[in-house]
Image 1 (cartoon, rainbow, N blue to C red):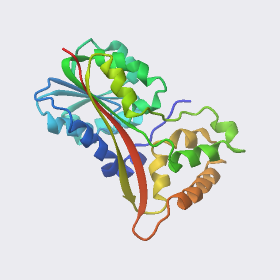
Image 2: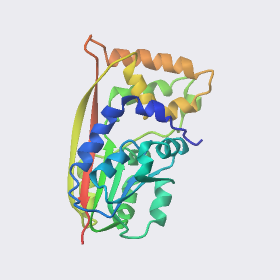
Image 3: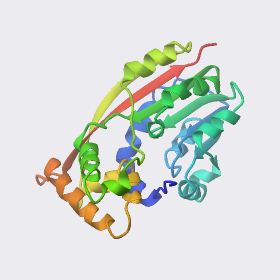
Length: 261
């Protein structure tokens, strides 16, 4: 089943989701790149920051979601960014070697279980001396994920959710060593953000736009509301509201690599 993303739900916490992107590109020391590509650009709101950073560059945003590309193409960013719908792997297969000066992939590779195997192709797409910048969530052992997985594995949900896509990532040192082996100079680190969320069931709102979406989409209409209510109840226990907002700790993995000349 093809996964359908909801740009509006994804943008519910746009500021919080945008912080890692800004921290990522802040470590890219490219002075005057000619070609910049954002793989997994989503609704394009963050890709526009690349145009702010490098206004003279030709900037392309690539995403596999028709809904995301539609929103991006209708946004103000479309005046400065070319948005293109394609699967990341297909784009890499067709990309000319060394054609990109700055290649960014923010919160996308975690959906590809074999993404370590894609690192050589990602590096190959970057011009010698250019930059590869990657960020992936590293919070998959947190209650926001484990509670959803445990509930989805119980009847009557398991019959529908078995085998759905689940995000996954590696520790920073794994990416560091893999990219060093490809001849890159690598800066890798992790950060845990403490997002203070407000509103009814904010953690559910957050995950329903990202990590929980494949599970929710896999459920039939007659079961989804029941699952959502059970999930919300469990999340409220794990992430209590104390009158000052709900704290969602969120670990992120960052890698910025300078490709060898």
